[in-house]
Length: 505
Image (cartoon, rainbow, N blue to C red; front, top):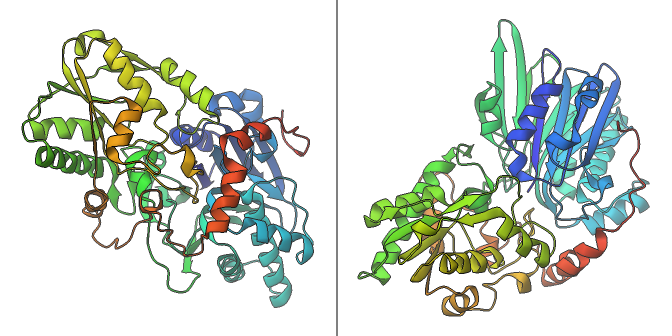
């Protein structure tokens, strides 16, 4: 789960990229970076931290040019040391910078190929650096073979080569120095990527971003999504050329984007996220009534923030009062993506504070978007009891999260997921609720698909264990678990960063 932005403008793009990154900050809070191009000169600034902390006035004045890309990151593959902040940059061919959202599932094999066959040295453990070097190598091969210089045709051929070699989830924006932007999305469209334009007089600016809300905030009109298997080339004059570069692409967007990751005011693959969450609440209410028609719920309270929409609609359908019982500290990040159980536990109490009068002597239904590790759920249920609730019921707008997500969300180890190997009743006991309700997977799919019936398939792998790319093996899952569990992540955090070059400090 990262956020990516790319802009070809008719004026300096540094401030616009900065503003867009603040809008997609929810997609990554560990690191941020911007790279711009002014003619043949490249300017890069990246570091660990929030956007507001990474970029200061001196950095913004150095980031010159009408072409650039930006990235916000939280670590999945690789560690969270500073060297793995994006965008990544290579000098040859032409000079290419790349930002990536997603995960490759064959990065280890590609890394070996890079060294042994492509003769490229990689400096980090990031699969995004692998993806950049694959693209750079394919572009070099095409240009050398055709001897026609760089143009859209060569770029599309190079992206076709990337699709043939890289497996997994990837939404990519890349900057080719002196030429323009390249964007592409894996053949299943697992991670989101949208394109928009802004026309002022005869001047046309083009923007690509992870979510449509970034376009809205900067005054761009949404042109649509980058299609699965599609590559987009945006020239310096704002011209757009598009092509499907892989055979038989299938749209199978990540279902968890609609549940949790995306902002409610975004539109992904023609589905309004806000309306999909309304429908999740409606379907969850119907399920609750079917299984518990004579409930004694006094009040519905959401767990801020992403569950608010579903919780409000659930309360409306049940005819029960909706109240805001928790106040969120806006300066604490998302807890389930924090590395280490101890840090997540500390952060929950820092993040939420209960309003006692909304809980005292009431039977409360808490509604959350999902239950991942169970850390937040267990603690907020206890907070509700401490605030005086008689009974505390819990409802999840998503089904049980039982399996690893390998496509760019930090759910790597099934053993760390509270639902893995447990029944609903057992989970209820673990988190300390009096009663627990989960959304059915079929209802969740229907709630999202209603916004765009053309979507015939979703990546729901964290719920059902079915990986849409068809190449995720048990051996891969075991290896990934060993690399990305809490213990491994903690040990990686101490890695000394000595690889960064050519950045502004």
